[in-house]
Length: 149
Image 1 (cartoon, rainbow, N blue to C red):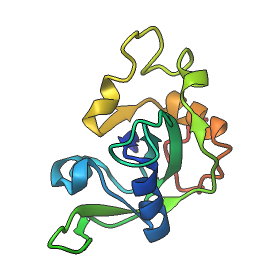
Image 2 (cartoon, helix red, strand yellow; image 1 turned 30 degrees about the vertical axis):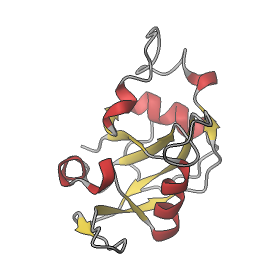
Image 3 (cartoon, rainbow, N blue to C red; image 1 turned 120 degrees about the horizontal axis):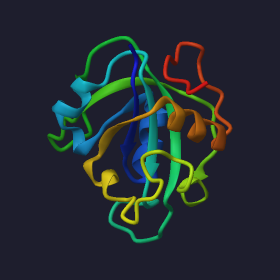
């Protein structure tokens, strides 16, 4: 059974992953990526455009499906070899989170809705995944089992 996930990273880091066809979470830590499986749906939420900035982007910036295979080490130079998983990224638009707050299960009715986002990777319902995908006008691969349809 496939799962749906939200991963958190700045938009510039998400863009690097989209260009390279991979995802990283929590600065390349292994444990979170071992919870993700092929066929799982992944949505990236970006609180900011650039890591460390306070520009208030607060948007979903990428959506896709985890490819077959296992986590592997990437090389970002300077001895930094974060763990990655390959992802088929969908054609999609950025979507701000604020218009969705009252409709998403993981945020609805929660005054501190951003708290869960601090963990870097967490599961969401298929319904939330579908709502986000629709807001992003995502064209998901037919292999995405977590479609929320």
